[in-house]
Length: 269
Image (tube, rainbow, N blue to C red):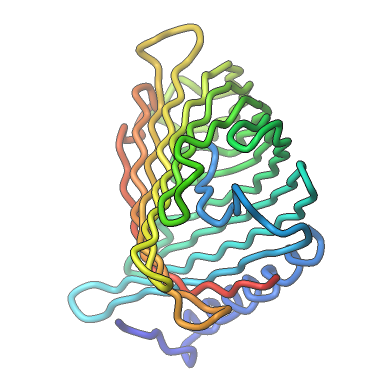
């Protein structure tokens, strides 16, 4: 892995960005499409506050110059039958000095458990993705979540059923005619899987299917899977792969997109 020099003007700009993201972690920790729910502690849990922050950096030099940074933070407050959760994520990337990734979201969720395996959920999210022409997306929704195998400590499976209302604002494009705002209702079906191979190694996957309530052929799929290795009690390393598919994307945007990343996580509780 190549670590870019901070001596050049371009390196100084990158260093400023990294410092900004570093302090953003702690601001979110104290201030406190739908997201990966791996850091959401479901099932049996202790009441109180807990959170996670992560940071990833990648680069390359030689035949190609590549720089990328990814940051995220999450926090949750749990009581006897109620849980509040917030999650933040931001990704930035350059290829040969040209920006090619700039996206982020802020997600909030309220979970009310009504039995050992069933809970009601309400959530909201705002996000942007510069290179998907998404200037702004805001959504509000809810549903029910069912724990499929709550008797297993090493394997957890959750099925979520619900829906949401979304408003999307697309940026202007010279070669597109779909500029403006789109309002849409979508169903929201998700499957969350967690498998612990040992005390220190675990696998996670979050799979979403979101069809439009007005047109069956208009649907979105999001699949996030990864492997997490615990280094110490509070630090872990994770590798994740994210695949998205939009059957009706904005004009000039590919239907399918893949992203992968490695990151270091710090857990505080």
